[in-house]
Image (cartoon, rainbow, N blue to C red; front, side, top):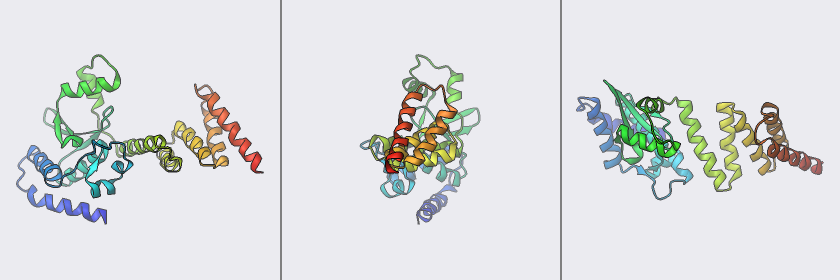
Length: 239
């Protein structure tokens, strides 16, 4: 149903896209349609609402965060022939459009506005805590994000939100997907701790043991070992 709704947006846009003589015209068309006519916008009032990260909710509510709005923006733009790419920029996901002689940086959270180099440097410095940022540093931060990178970042956002809201069951579901996508041992550690939080102690033991084996000198070894002992103790008491 939601894919059909998305396709309807594409069909409406394509009807007007014939008049776009250049990539810049295509961007103007996309911005006008998505933000002015359809009313999609960044959710400034409740940024950490988990619904901002689910694309079907974004389509329903017309509210999102930078990465979810960027996904929608890219998918629509690519159907119009715009070679839009995601950018895992520090603190705020962006979209880029390669053009002759450089890149155009775009911010769908702020209505698809273009973002200049100096503003990008300022944003990056604020997040990274650096006093200065060279042009070469900025180019490194503006590399294209792979689809897997986008998924991992979206899931990471949700994991943090659900953990902050003390909803371990939902955080566990998200974390399990992160383990499947990345194979990251730190994510497996977090999954183990979440398994323990929901009472799945045998699963917690497997993940925590795997982490301690792989990261025997990590700074959090003692804390993880205490969690592992507690999980084993819970299993013993159940038996």
